[in-house]
Image 1 (cartoon, helix red, strand yellow):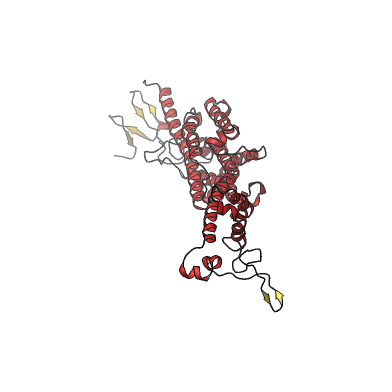
Image 2: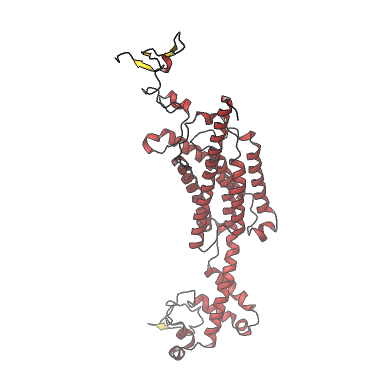
Length: 412
């Protein structure tokens, strides 16, 4: 340590840089956490599918903690930091401006994650999920024909599948059963015309086994085989559905990662500055982190074995890699947010950031010392101070006493 003023300036510069870098990392980390928690919760509750499995979440944590800290917390200080007002002891780590960017970017990412998770299987044929009804209809006969060692189910597989698919057990309308249902064997004539459907008893045991079995509350052999076959197909469908959901979930995982990569760039500026790319291409650590993360993500998606066995994702087609644009879209969104804030600040009351002195002074605001340009407390006497022949300081609007302190000219 020394008494050189440049050393003091340098210490202040590095102190502000550390504090600002911590804020950058927090803004990035809170956005990732917000999106990951919301999408994981709703994915598990609505639909019963985990959008991000355990190993994928570990990879996300690696990006969020280790890679994010290396990229954002190691940025060198810039001279602009000296133009900012000093931080108070009660300064909050997370400002309203940071919360604004967290919410805007988080909402943008959640929109796309929910679209891929719920809308893509509904509206895009490539990601369409086979319904349980369709699975029973298309796979029942083949699955029961190869049902382990249960010869009875193998022998009666066609009968069992027809009952399950056409008699409302569980598919088909039991109260408007067509003659595809084997439980309806004799056409019913009404007014001299064959009817197209009949109604079966609401009680499943009565419909399959008869009134006597229903009264005794005992399942007949056929109903037992139907129940066993139904549970077997439900288990098979669950595994089948997980495999089918791999396609949209792989796209979701890839889009989520690239959203974080580009949002990491947005987090380089936390005070609504437009200069998020300033110094970007000369920051070797930041560029290395972005490049390594993107390269590993490409390997995770494309390398056989690593994708299917470990991360449980499918290899994406080249068209699906265009979802890279979802992540890229967060950058213009960030610029739009900053522009809207600066131009609508008086209307929306969104800004609460440390203002650069050069910009504010030009507008008649506060100086770096925190004193107003026109304040009466802006040390008016210092500019008129001079040295007398005795070596003491005198002030333009008064005189000094023996102690050298200024005395008002009107004081007697």
